[in-house]
Image 1 (cartoon, rainbow, N blue to C red):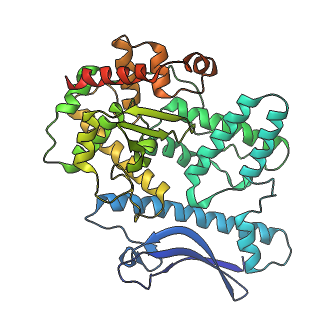
Image 2 (image 1 turned 90 degrees about the vertical axis):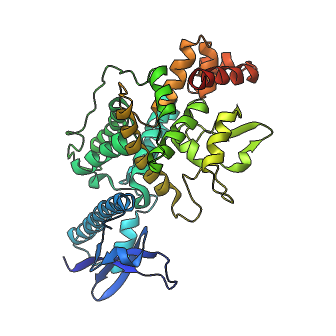
Image 3 (image 1 turned 30 degrees about the vertical axis):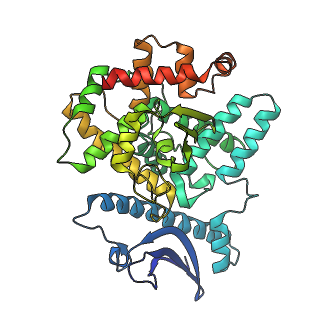
Length: 405
């Protein structure tokens, strides 16, 4: 290989600001750059490598993820160069950059090929399967982050293992959900193999693609009360995680990504209005005093965000969210142990707990479905469309009182 690839760091000209990490590609003495999208402080880079801080575990966790991403990106650049070498045709440093970024018309890329498949499914009336494929590819691309799309022949066993770890550990999903995404990706991959767009490298051989019997994910009401009553005054991080968990519960089991994205101007006239990131469905929740107490405790004055999960000055929003989710689940595991929670505590269990508590308090199933925004159940949505919002507000207040009473 006559081409070299090295990770480089360009410090900011402004003291105290983060600089950019990029890859330098040199071919025939011509240098070109490929951005990574990552920003680091000068003290976090030395001799071509990321330096992990000893006394800042949260930042260390974030940088560890960046290190792994940079390794994967470098492998992809090297694989791109190898393909150009194998073609036997002359190429330039610019050709390496272009090939790495994958033209949108290249059906050898996952995104382009999957789009072709979903359009075909829609034309043949298989709309639900098309939606399933799209959601699975979008999940994988969220995992990829700044690296974006990928060629089909670059998908290997190690990458799919990392993706499974991301789903289970960083996103807090259960094995069945992780399996669901991987089964769909495998189906798309197998279609590509059948069309001879890539050889079969069996990338899904070591990840779980079965279906477990659904396990209970809702914690008991009594356990929820114990979590609320914990004295966490000596551990600010754990107290913050507990309050966010309670807020998620109070807001009818709002997902963590939706909680993180809440902005102050969405709270008006005693109601919080937001659109779910997952479905874009608009939900309206009556604002209760328990919610305001949490906001009063944690809101950063002047911030556009209702809660300090994200920051306008913190850089890439998605990466901020993933880091916050990771930290949140770590703290919730500790909290779960303190109250002897019968199931692993994650951000998502608050949603299950709200639904389970409402059901035990004889809140109508139809009200619960509408409160959670289950618009994927089309028949249920048609039935629920005429429900008065006051029913939902009363249902939420009933559930909250079961915990705070």
